[in-house]
Image (cartoon, rainbow, N blue to C red; front, side, top):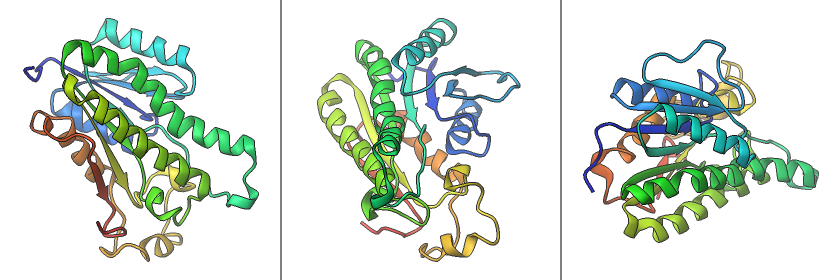
Length: 245
């Protein structure tokens, strides 16, 4: 299937202008993509140009469907889906109640599943598609400087979901890959990483600095691009050396 030139990428978790989702949207728009943004809350100013937003809770299939239907009416066919929406949680295992556990798993893992279920069938019908899911180094380490067990479990689940879907969808022309950042200076780390907080976060990074949202966005742009059609089921660490291999 020829890689379409008139195409849309849907990016979830794009509400914060400081987040990875927003960085992906900006980068793709500059590259000529139409972009559909999904978040529970989007900026009050309307997106400009090729970028269109629609509020939706990724744990609610009806809201996802409403957003998808809107994009399908207003934008070219969806070629790519980038699942960034997620929440962190520093609560330790012994203090984690069922409600908190279900909330983290619901947003991070089930939300990714539900959004994929809505958009991937159209890609399969068209014979081409790209999905990139966001995991975390925490899935490999069991937690991080800020995150803990529920978060690590949800991100490990995203990796399993990605690998399984990649295997099943490979014959259809749809690729599914996963990106695992380490410490990126976004609000998901319990707020911005101030100068006072920075030493604790940088201590575990061999490169000696935080990662940037645009570095993650650059990797995602490649994985949904025309040169990545032979890459599926792959796991890309982007972590400053925090986890080697």
